[in-house]
Image 1 (cartoon, rainbow, N blue to C red):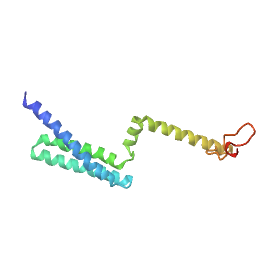
Image 2 (cartoon, helix red, strand yellow; image 1 turned 60 degrees about the vertical axis):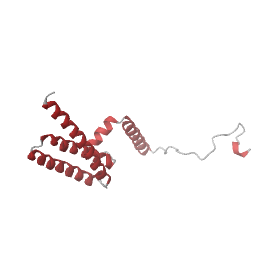
Image 3 (cartoon, helix red, strand yellow; image 1 turned 180 degrees about the vertical axis):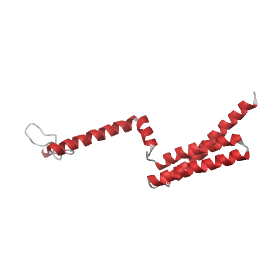
Image 4 (spheres, rainbow, N blue to C red; image 1 turned 90 degrees about the horizontal axis):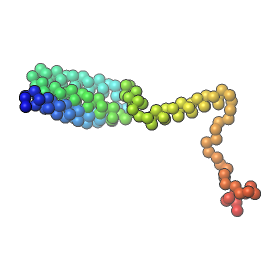
Length: 147
């Protein structure tokens, strides 16, 4: 086995470790973000901190540790999204693409909006969402509870 293969394996291990560490840090930071602006700022900070770490690692000559920095940035960005808990930016597209339930929910909401707009244009009555009358009546017109 050559040294190149061993270095590749160790680099991949450092990358996985960086992803785990970055995800943990990003998850905690994402949970503290109250709005989308703070989330975007946290993403920029994570990328800049990762870039700085990457430059320091490469300046020291420990190239294998560069994969840790690379993995940490990737994990931090994913952890921020996970911790924030909402789909924002390009993640929204990915979440909609990969989640059939979300697409179905969007189609149902769009259908409901179109129906409401049509009712508003035509002046039709709103749909009855809850009935207060007892639906169970016997043949003489008396309710089942009145017996």
